[in-house]
Amino acid sequence: MDSVRVAADHYAAAITLLGVGDEVGARRAVEMGLARTRGPRSQVIEACLDDLAAQLDGEAALRRLAEHTPGPQGWLADPSCLAEAIMRLGRAHLVESVIEELAHLMPEDRLIGFVHVLAAAGTPACDDLVAIIAGVVEGAVGAAAGWVHPGVRTSPIAHALTHSVITAAWSTAPAGAPDQQQVIVAVARDAGRVAPLVALLDHDDLGATLRDAFFLPDMVPARLDHEVLRPMAAAGLPAAPIAVGEARALTVHALTASLAIGRHLPSEAHQAVVARIRRLAGCAGGSSTPVYTGA
Image 1 (cartoon, rainbow, N blue to C red):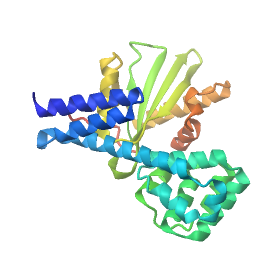
Image 2: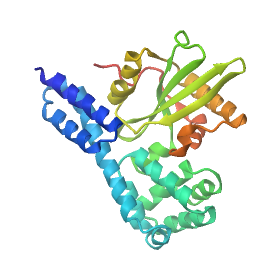
Image 3: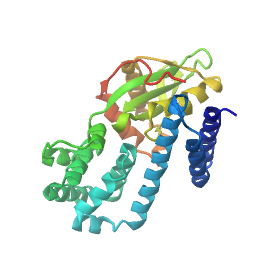
């Protein structure tokens, strides 16, 4: 059998296994797929498998960090160690989730104090963390971080989390389901990856509301095509490219309408979706051309 097809089959199996929570099986499938990639024809699948392997490595590192964290008192005592451990996760969406968890766990006044401790430490990792807190955490904490951040050059991860750029967007057509719409937005991240936002909109006589939305893990653009756009098309929900400004406006306005009527987004239970979409409201937009159109 063609080695590219076998590698693609292993890739598909890894995604399926991840979907049912079998990370060990997914890792095995990724390794078996990578063993069959060789030559120019395998480049796309190899890039997908490499990125998925790196994602699994990062998620394992995040679990280890969570298991061995000393807690807020330890973070205040040794901020540099914590900052370096967080930045070593190596993927923007993992770092973002840790910062959001810190904001959830620590009272506002204590987190502001932690920001000042980080700023005083002055290491590159601490400066990165202060910058990210300024960009990710809403309210007084984010404002305090923005005030004390030294303005030094930050890492690619910190830059990606504090300078959001939408690179491409897609939407389903109203023909199949005129009262519903799915909008997919690709937000630029470090190392050429994107953070895909999937937004589910309901339409009625009063306009659009956001039923739910969620961010997928950062991924190379080819994975967005293979893991989101192609499965949607296969399920009878093809998504066509739309202007990034239109996608941003649709999503932000639908969120505003949902919040106005007191709707709670189900994904908020495990992800700070509302805050992340609010950040997109003022972000820059790139080309409306798809970020990946290859095989």
